[in-house]
Length: 173
Image 1 (cartoon, helix red, strand yellow):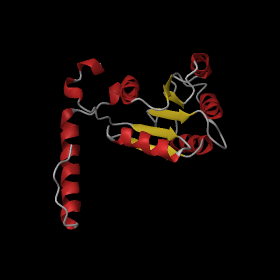
Image 2: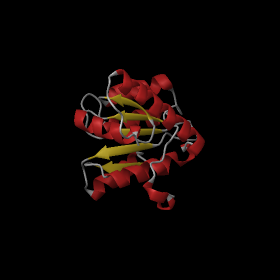
Image 3: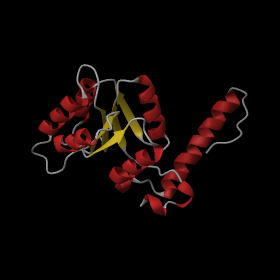
């Protein structure tokens, strides 16, 4: 439970995320939020690219799929319909969250009825985003030992990079 998270510590996950978003600013924002949690992220500029990536990697590779509703070529609704068709004989289904600027309750309910597990309204609110990650990835949380190893490795790697460039490193969180 996120309420039991002391000091609002950033939870690190061992998971793969497929993000389908056509807006470059939104891509950067969501990617930044995801990388803070040590998540592996594949970004698709539209639903067709996302669907092809999903097919290539196969069911179960992506622990969470974030789909923008309004995208060119293939929108989020067409994409989820195709994914659900592929998964129709599976006992379990992919966790798919709609990303939408559409705050109308009836539309949000329609997204759930279509097959989305959840939705996140844009602009994205960080606490809601973090809660959504936790909801779908809580069984993918890295142990403290894993996180400490990874954080120490990243600090050493960043120290090496900064020392090569002659730049002092003051603080890494």
